[in-house]
Length: 386
Ligand code: KIV
Ligand code: ZN
Image 1 (cartoon, rainbow, N blue to C red):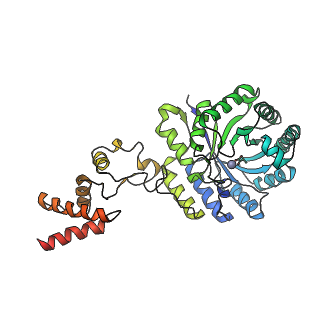
Image 2: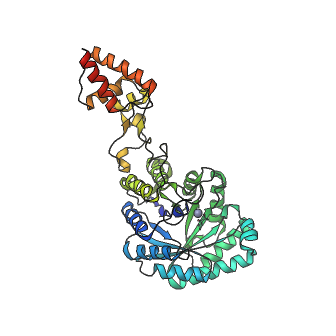
Image 3: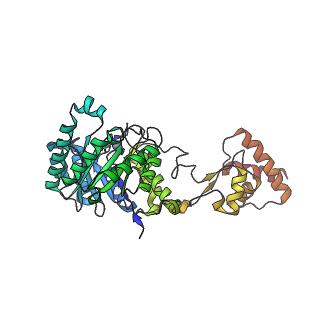
């Protein structure tokens, strides 16, 4: 049987930490309902201790969203965990996600705690969370810059205390894919209790390697990937959900895993998140950018008109987009131009088509994109002159 990788969506928690985003409960609920349609396994709805607004948002999602696990984030303190537990009370499948930093740099400058103190706090936090809910996730923040011996000890004790998921964050997006794979493999080999918990990764994109690192972890056998729609998240963001899912789909021959995502909801989800958060999607963004299924060069347009798979490794329909687009610009060729004329209702004899194409090329040298209105103007003007 094919192994399943669970998709943990953190758009509403880490994603909301994107500078410039602040979502109210109604907005979060609307996104959560779309995430339910997308069929994610886990929705990290927020950080209940952060504000009353976030507490209420997590509670509303816990009340109204059914299907996915609803997670709430909590530092490794009683106050945070109690607040998360309270917000998650109405959830059908609640999860408390507790974390504490494990790297020397974070322990020294941020926590001002020793390894033993961090270990003690982590165990106490997992136990306290466990007194409220069965499902407890533990993250060692900045795991990728932590001492491996200490990390093994920390995860081992967290599992013994009751953690059902252990999450390995590359908090500052520092790891390279090979290093991250080594870290995950070492932990899977050296934490004796690892089989009793799901293993998860959470990668940030500071060096643009979040998706690559997450996919490397899939090859190492992890069972959960944390990611966010449109790659939103703290600083440069988290691994982009749509990129991970479409990589798993398109290269199923390579990754050989299943997931639960309804990919036909990807485009709609991406648009909704962009509209509500106000964070625009860059045009050349993989999978959901405006150019992801747009072809400009004549050679490419000729290719996709003959057979889409020449230049499309996934179909626009698979992400819920109606069609691809052929953008008419200075690199476009006669085939795409003739095709667009046909779509606009013009059937020109060859000599007129040649003339119109020449005028189109002249215009394309002056304009970035030639629109349908421009093409109609060329043809109509030509008809008047005949
Ligand atoms: O990046 C990080 O380490 C986090 C943790 C809370 C998982 O967001
Ligand atoms: Zn994070």
